[in-house]
Image 1 (cartoon, rainbow, N blue to C red):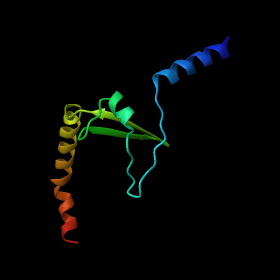
Image 2 (image 1 turned 180 degrees about the vertical axis):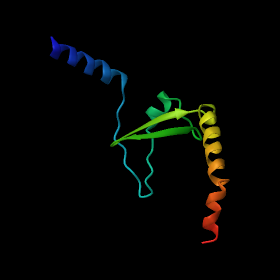
Image 3 (image 1 turned 90 degrees about the vertical axis):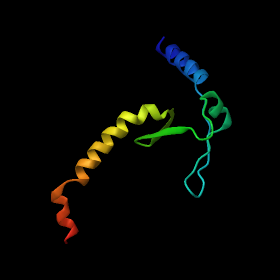
Image 4 (image 1 turned 30 degrees about the vertical axis):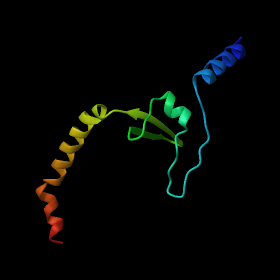
Length: 93
């Protein structure tokens, strides 16, 4: 019974997923196959989030609005670091 369940999950999974092998250019670039672009509604100029976990890389289409809170937080942290008076010591070394 367990083997049959595994086969069913593989069958369902492969029906829901599309896999393609792409080549990396000399500049480290890849092209997303047109069929995947179409099914994910990715158009020229759209932003894609690239996440690495171990040896796996995942792409996800994102909107600017999804990153605004993260960008604001990043700017606050960077501003605190840049305005740190203790770091000005290194300008004199």
